[in-house]
Image (cartoon, rainbow, N blue to C red):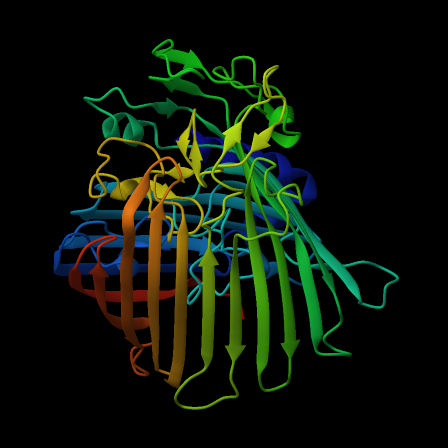
Length: 503
């Protein structure tokens, strides 16, 4: 409710000076509606991995669920010929058998002037430089968890630098927000002395540079930096640097400046101060060759915790997501192929040591990706906010740590294949298969590697005579010691249309 009032107030302030009535009238034009009804059923230890993962936190963790979803939206891109562009959306989900009976999944407003957009509220955002349907997802900001409400100033599309003949372009964003999983965290840790937090704050920023002009030559090089941070809020059941229990309810450190420029210290750093909050990020690099009928791309997403792997302090980067994407010439069988390899076994090495008088060497290794001593995990509502191949806290009960808001299985070696085809305008299919070996973490290693095989087979049919309606059927399978065995079916009916569309 507070988010809705805030968005309404900002819209009024921005729209009234810009020709009031005409601007407001546009809000009722080109408005879309849609919805879906989804059911899953099956058996096994957990729902099939690809039923759960990369669905913005709305994928079922258990078997046998039902979910209904409805939305309205107006895309800011509708006003592409105007200097001022307006967009908004509302998206709700309700169901049975999931983590929550009711969710406000999206509620946002976008106000854009030329290439600069102010986005307010809770909105699903795709991973940078990844195929949303076939990739395993971004390492820092993926599509695995529910969106965080935020105020975001962004350049949503690449902007060509004047005077460079279209050779250089860039996009960027800066955002601040607040997590909405207070109730979930408290319930998750209930009856234990495990840590959890309340009213934690969120910050992210990114700058991506693109070199090349595909109108003149089909080669493009894109690279840049993406960073994020959890900070502020209150912490419960926190543990001190030497393992002693400190106050049950404490204020966690950090402010908007210390989140943007990592600095300060956490409450339990003792004599060895780190930057306050949970800081992490990714270096991105992608090379595209875009022919008129086909394209191929190779990309890298190198993840780092704090500063250990941000630069070259521990030698050449050994941990990263590497990918290859091929879009084939138009045919009836196969349109897109994605292959990815995720390796996170190194994590700067197994030793962490703060410099002391007796041993002055500082070793900032043992990064334990997605884990933090104050905030538990890089997660929102139980799902990791990055790549789901590092198992989310949602799986901790199955993995032997019930009630823990922590990541204990982050040393991963995985291979992933995604395939997609469009045999006709009305029929499409996709296949995802992932093979993962997981070694736990340096402080909690597995006796033997845990192995997981994750499969998704999905087909979608949109009848020509029933415009806006589609039917989807999917089969999912898990096998191995990582997340156990399971088989399941997912059936979905979806529909969309226009409330009012201008010609």
